[in-house]
Structure formats: C-alpha cells, structure tokens
Amino acid sequence: KAGVTQTPRYLIKTRGQQVTLSCSPISGHRSVSWYQQTPGQGLQFLFEYFSETQRNKGNFPGRFSGRQFSNSRSEMNVSTLELGDSALYLCASSEPGTSEAFFGQGTRLTVV
Amino acid sequence: AQSVTQLGSHVSVSEGALVLLRCNYSSSVPPYLFWYVQYPNQGLQLLLKYTTGATLVKGINGFEAEFKKSETSFHLTKPSAHMSDAAEYFCAVSASYGSASKIIFGSGTRLSIRP
Image (cartoon, rainbow over the protein chains, first blue to last red):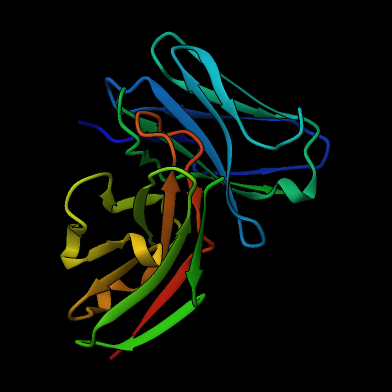
C-alpha cells in the first residue's frame, strides 16, 4: 500500500497570502488529521476529517480551515498568512476503529 | 484531560549502550500510548503502541516500552544503541481508541549517538 502523500513538500509564501496543502491518505483510510509542528509549540492538533465531515478541531484561529473529499483526500487552507504560520504541517490517516495514525512526510511552509 | 511529559529534551548515549527515553502520562481514562520517531525533514513513524493487554510492548527496530500504571509511565528502551537510532522521539497519548484525532504529543526527546 502506498503511504500518506502530502504535496507540496516545500512552500514559500509571503505574508498576507493564502496557501492550500494537500494530503492523500492510505487507501481505505477514511480519517485524516492535520497537525502543525513548530520548534516553539511542538506538535499541535489542527483538525480531523472523517467521511467529509470535520469531526474534531484544535485551538487554531479561523484562518485555518480544511475539507475532505469523497475519495478521502483532504486539503487544508491557511488564509492571510502570518510569519508565525511557518511550520511543518503533517497529515495523518487512520483506519476506521483504530487510533493508530500513519503520517505523511509533511509540507514545510515558510512565510516571509 | 490527557497529557504527556517527556523528561529530557536531549539524550546522548554511546553506540552499543542502553537507550532509555522517559515519558510520563496523565489521563483521566485508560490511556492509549504511543512512541513515534521522526528523522530530519521527515514525518512521524510509529515505533510502538499500548492499547490494552500486555504491559511490555515490543516495537520496531528493537525498541520496547513498558506501561506502568502505578507510576503513570511509558518509558522507551533499546538494549544497544545504533548510529541509525539518532532522531527525535515523541511520546503520545490518545484518550479515544477508534479515532486518531487529537493525539496529544510530548515535547520530544532528541537522541544522539556517540561513536
């Protein structure tokens, strides 16, 4: 089985712009979660999607949003980028009925 | 609420020596515990997990961890360190088996291996 695929791997954006990150889960996995990783805050949960519905949300401003498509692929969007949004964004997928998360390699976002 | 505390942000051991990475958890319900490893510029890879049953859990790459409820600990060990073990290790807890959402991660421990 192919693993979790995140695209792109690297992004450089300017403050005020918006960005969309993509995640393709492992085939058969219907749950997709997003995490932000920074040196200062560590790994923080952003949100989880299951069957195209947001099931859980972390403590992030409304500039961070996401969606999931019928094929379980997910996108997250960050609008009005700030310097502090620079981070590694990780996507994880899981099989129904388990809490074992499989992570992608992440998208490194740099805001300048 | 669930949380994990990793003791020591950086651990350095000699090649061939015992690796011990410490993790204590806090959970109001029976926890599901994990150890993940992250190599530079990579995502997280699951090393091992504890859900229920046997308290000594064996994982990949020769790592194992013991769940000790009385000490609320889930320390990660490996008898003999290898240079390829150099990475960052994260202990994590989930209160909800059946959902991978809202896994709470520790702050991480960077493991260095001395030749």
